Image 1 (cartoon, rainbow, N blue to C red):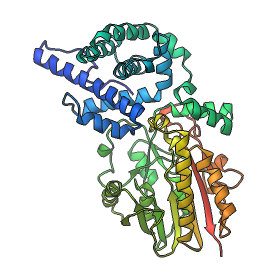
Image 2 (tube, rainbow, N blue to C red; image 1 turned 180 degrees about the horizontal axis):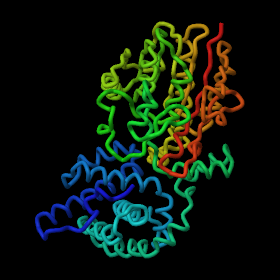
Image 3 (cartoon, rainbow, N blue to C red; image 1 turned 60 degrees about the horizontal axis):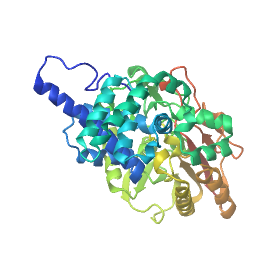
Image 4 (tube, rainbow, N blue to C red; image 1 turned 120 degrees about the vertical axis):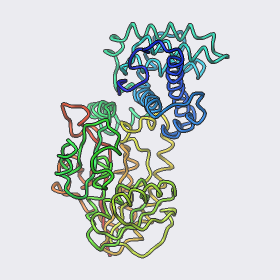
Length: 458
């Protein structure tokens, strides 16, 4: 995350008063959007994308695409380093930052994030934060406090950065769970990996080697293309031609393990956003994609058209939809998504342990329904992008225990190249984000996933 293309990446030139005023307004608007979106995530448990959309709709200034992207970058880095930012501010405040008025807390957090983690001149971050505070009539009197605290953060930057612990950037309840399940050392590797910038992985149904070369990327061990770029996806070679689609390397594994073949009837339950549907369709299977979200399925239709692939799209509740028996079912179940925090940092602060209970119950219902939609001998692949055992190992252990018509179909090492060490004692894949280390951080890691394959017996 950097500032090369931000509106404050260089000094205002030309002495044009109107141009300077416009730049100042956009700079304030971007920070205001970031601070407001941050509040939506923390206070209302909104997703990052929803928070940005809602906040932007109420923005006081018109922002162009570049300014909105800058606001998004600020919000993302603030959420990624929220625990450390709070600690740094608390050490320089008389009372905790969360005890200050929420508007001031958000302004301090996004200001500190720019100073510590983004290539923003400290004076610019401080000045804009102070100006934002002065624009709020109710909080204008706290402008001096904002100025003093952020200047101390800037002065102590090196000391703060050297003392930060990645584990402090996650809620205590989540860290306690990971330490208990994975052990202290593995939990630390997971948090370090989740703090990295997410990779850009692509799935090319045809000629992955050729497209990796054309895109200046490289193939991951399991055949995804990993690209080192910050360019807009739509501008990359092959996008308009439908040569590839965006999909994390771990997210590509469930469909690959289902191993659909031409002519098979395959059901993709909970299909949106659609990467797995496109994988199955590109294998020549007759795919039925089911999801309850009509807008998300509409995006899937658009991507299928771009990829020149076909699938039957049905808007329905996957837990109750009925149809003819299938040869294979892919159930990528709704979950907490804790394995994707590097890509969706809001998840760490919008989910709670209580969400595990409701989501695990839904996963149970989906599993029991999915197996009834399979032909005898048919294959079921269950996956979640979660690091929590209730949504993975325990869910499948209980499923096998209560259903006599289900048997495990273990994943074999040659089916999971580069991930054979992630195969557990029951033949399921437990992928954690710290796998696939690389000297270049932007080429390291992948999303956390649990994937189990089973067959219907009888």
